[in-house]
Image 1 (cartoon, rainbow, N blue to C red):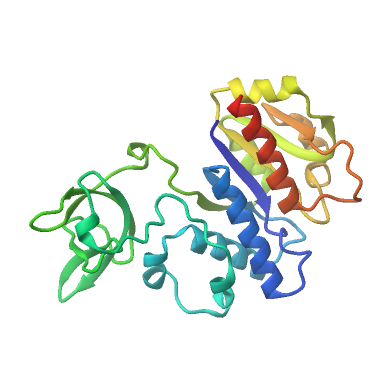
Image 2 (image 1 turned 90 degrees about the vertical axis):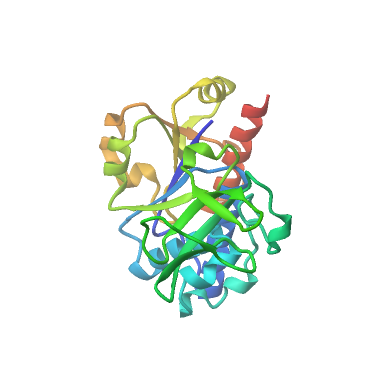
Length: 271
């Protein structure tokens, strides 16, 4: 089951401090990594702000990036001042292995292109960068596979389709939710307490479907019905389901709904 999620840029609105906003972004990143989310779409919503959108996108991308590449790819800015206290994702490409003698032919790693004295190199997280002969520009992030380790380490670029294990999520921004939904090629599952209660029949359909799924969440102030109005009925291959039919709380926060719904889908997919 290939799942992407869509969350509004107002997702951090209900947190008052940058520390709390950063922690919430970290919870979203952790949930997406645990459940192997393919892409996180951040869509603009009337309750969102440019500052929150930038912070959320930045922290999601920062946490997905291997630790050894962050210094090259992210500047020292105020929005990342709490990054050091956020929980790491510890996903497969976050290898902390630095000694090249432990590398094996066929290993896959992330790298970033560096320029030094007129030559190009790749930092792949080992003590010394490896020579790079490709055409990509400086600070371009690449996925590479180890070709040789003796007498020197050499690598080749590979595509995403060649990586068989989970290799992190992508973060993409969209101008509005409706445009994202109408362009999506696959199943759309929107979440709302106003939707029909999720049933085993619904779960069986999504588990058996070969189409990619887009799991859509509303914001702290407005749900998907308020955002889309009557246009919600015109979206193809879409269902609106309630996964918390007996909730005792007045609301379910987005990060709670994200973890809960992904847990249910994951359990259904494992049986």
